[in-house]
Image (cartoon, helix red, strand yellow):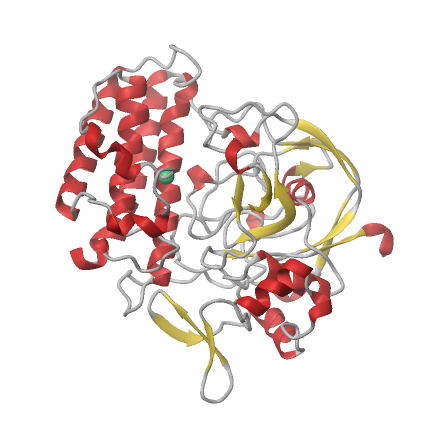
Length: 441
Ligand SMILES: [Fe+2]
């Protein structure tokens, strides 16, 4: 986000971001009853009531104690909500705050934070400079809102989230080329200037990326269904060795939440509603191994993280990297499908106003995009404000996802933003697009 220079505007912006996050948290936790809040809907996810109090506990730790110097409100609950102390699968067996108390705790913390915000000067060190730690907490809550939305997707039972209208289809999709050319040369990857960027996005550094072609849009359900009907899940040669092993072990045959209908057509369940798979939407709920196999089937490959970011940010006309594909302006509803406005990705080719200089569309919003790359530090990386934010995850175990999805909020999504997950994960709102080297043209 664009950060205001004067303190009172910055205060208002921070308050707005915190309130937006809380409104969403409330919407995602008030639409189910207490039993549903306490229940674990999948061993991959926390009970929703854990997320609720964890968000408040992190806010208390970083803002009330860290910035405000206050004493802990309930020190005995800190270990329960420490994500590193208890894996998700164990959280339902903890003596968690019941829904009523969790809501009360979150309200009390937030009230005190808004009081603190009125008095903070933003000049007492890097943690508060430009409101960084307030931004970190707003992003943290929005990230949990996305996780909670994934819990809703995994939840069995009928529809509880209010239906959101889909995006209108764009007029010019049929005229779009299948791929765009991103010219070769160096560009600035990452950032040293974005005030609320997290440690793993820093510092900005030059990377040389040879010319390559990238899909104009994310891969669609229709294209992915062709991969399935062409025997993609049966052809070992299309899969990496680890991917084939996992495909066998987990018996993967289609994206998560897909099933065959009576007449053989593909159906999928989304937020409690079963419907025919919409062919023009980006495919979602595929793991990295499936994305990698599809790309090989298509005679292509996944883009590297550097390629993805160059396609999303590099402006050949000015030679500089933009904050977003469309420029430096914060995302508006005309640019990208973010913020759980639609509760589904828009058709591939939507959001012409959000196009990158290369012509690629929907790089921000709609679906997270798997890249070929492992999650690694940039040259000059410094862990901040704590090692467990990013540093402990660096290495070959995690693959990078880029671009944010309809489920992600603009405060936690930018051209430099890096997400990461295990290559087997399918419950996240992730799809992908493919690439090829330009010299093979
Ligand atoms: Fe968290």
